[in-house]
Each structure stands twice: as C-alpha cells, then as structure tokens.
Image: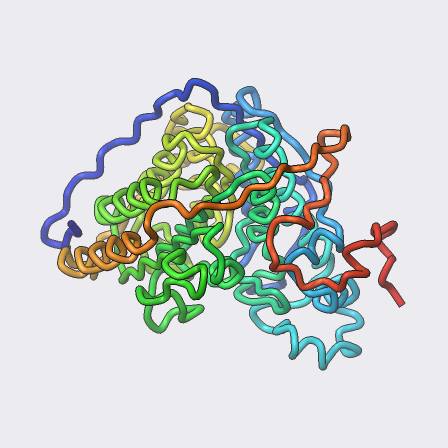
Length: 437
C-alpha cells in the first residue's frame, strides 16, 4: 500500500474532468496582504496576495466569480468563540498590550500568536470569506467556494494557537450545517487540524479527517486512536504520517480513506483545508509532496461531485504556496495551467526558473507499506462501527430573507458550539465599537 524509498512509483499525471456544472466562487480581500505577524515570523499573509496575483495573471478570473466578503462581525464570531475572547481580540493592539497582560496569558497570545496591527480586521477577513462561501454553497449559488485567507484550523473556542486566532473553518461549517445534515472536513496541512476536531468531537453531524505528521510535532495531537466521544464516537478520523511521505504514497492512503468515508458517511458538503506546509521544501514541514501530489487531493475531492469549500491554511515557503494554490484554482476551474509563469506583480520571487512546478526532493520516506496498511486497517475498522450514515432529524430551514448577495444571514441555529452570552447573540451588533470601553 505504501512505498518505501527503494520502491518509488511514478505519480500519474493529473487529468481534469469537466463536471456538468462547476460554478466557482472565489473570495479575496485586497487588504489581506497588508497584515504582518512581525519580522522573522514564518506566517506571511502576503503569500495570499502572491497567489492571487498569479491566479489573475493566468486569466482564471474569466472562469469564476470573484467576491470580497463582508468581514465577520463579533456576533458571527461568537457563534463558536467566547464573547470575552473575541472582545479581547477586538481591543488589544501592540500599543496597549501592557494593559492586557493577564488576558494575553489566558488567551495564549504571545510568541507564536503575536498581537500585530490590524489583528482583529485580519480575523474578520478570514472568517467572512469562509462564512460567505458556505452561505453561497447553501443557497446553490456555486458548486465550489474558495477562500485562501481561511483554513486557520488551530484556533480554539477561547484561545489562539499555532498562528491562528479565529477558527473560520468552524464558523463556515456551522453555516453549512443550517442546510446540510452531514459535513465532511478534510485537512491536508502537515499539522493536525486540532481546533476543528475539538469543536465537533462530540457530534455525528461533522466528520473530521486529518492527514498529518504525528510524533514530537506541533500540536502533538491526532493519534490514530482519537476517534471522538459520545455521539461523535468514530466521527473523528486521524491519519498520523511520518517524515518524507511522497506523492504516490500519499495518494495510496488519501484516496482509499476518503472513498470509504464517502461510502459510509455520505456527507452532503465537504470542506477541504489545503495547508501548503505539506509541500516539499516547506520551512516548517517535513513531508515531500510535489505541487501535483498536493493538488491530486483537491482534484479527487472536486470529482466527488459534492458542494465543496476549499480553504488555505499553513505554508511557509511563500513562492511554493502561491504556485500550488494557483494550480489548484486552475483544477477547480477545469483548467491545467501552463508551466511557464505569466508575468505578475511578484515575478522575481519565482526565479531562477520562473516555472509553476514545486518538485519533490530525494528525502527519505519513513512511511513503510506495513505502517500504512496498519493505519488503513484500523481506520476502516473504526468506520465500520459508524453503521452507515447517521440519521439526522432535519427541520425546515427558515427561508433566507431577500438580502444582498454579500450579506450574511444570522447562523445562530446549527451547532451547540456557541460560547457567546445570550444577550450578545440576540442583540444586533450595530457598530464596530459596540463593546469598547
């Protein structure tokens, strides 16, 4: 099943199958590249702007609808996060950080998750894109929604973690649950999708499936035996992988696992987190995927024919993240991009070859066939215990009000993962300064 270093198998080239209908909604906010975590910090929102420039210069804007989402409001953020945590994010700045020393410790803000200028606005952009993408999928306005500013999967209900402050994925899934009985979340970031798994650990309405490096690696969670609790038992799937996994090996475990989940769980919507730190040569990653090996996962999910939300995530070698997300955007629009990069605003970043490709290295693949077979056997056995798709009591969804395309409906129904006080949820948030002193 897996392939050792001595048995390299060529990876089949990707072919795109045009689906009958394939309307893509792409969310981008031009301000996102202005935010900076600080000098020397590996997380660079600028890579989203680089990817966007490539996507535009490849002419993909002709194939999809492009939107700037309304930033998520406090009220929307508090559908998952606690009021006091969101209030803290909205008020803290680098200048007044001294006033918030106690809160900074409590909410895990500091080295990995620094306070930077515009932090709250950055969270709003990330959350707004994922929520609006989900809302458009719900209303049948598109088949695929893309938000590369999203995918921040480590953020918890009331604390920042792993460069993530607001969990836009959880907010997007809560929106999807208003219309969809079951949602599948897939995570191909090199790190475990712990924040999303934790949010839905006790429910059978969301199945989370994370492929990640496990063992002495951030965040240290996501072992094979973690499968959920209570009603959520067997609805969390973890695929712990070792260093150096290559395209063919990754495909040999990704496709069977997702196929089996689709068969047993029968989700009616999929959210795919496309963290670029699983690519070869990433600053913080330790996998050996080429651009095509990474994109194969996107292509496979697209061909399942289920409404699909595609999000960004990690990725710390900027030029490779930009290349890969552009290539994947092409695939989602049924177009294989030319390997010669078009001239773009960041052309000099892509030297010396100015090609689209991200190539694998000769890194040793520590994932033996026996190891991967053991994982597959265990996952299949856990899935058998789910007794096919759970029956979900579906109630009539109230009709959406006739409002502008970019307006968000109130998504307070869906999941009991809200941390907000009743007052904050029931009152309309009039202005940005609602909770200021």
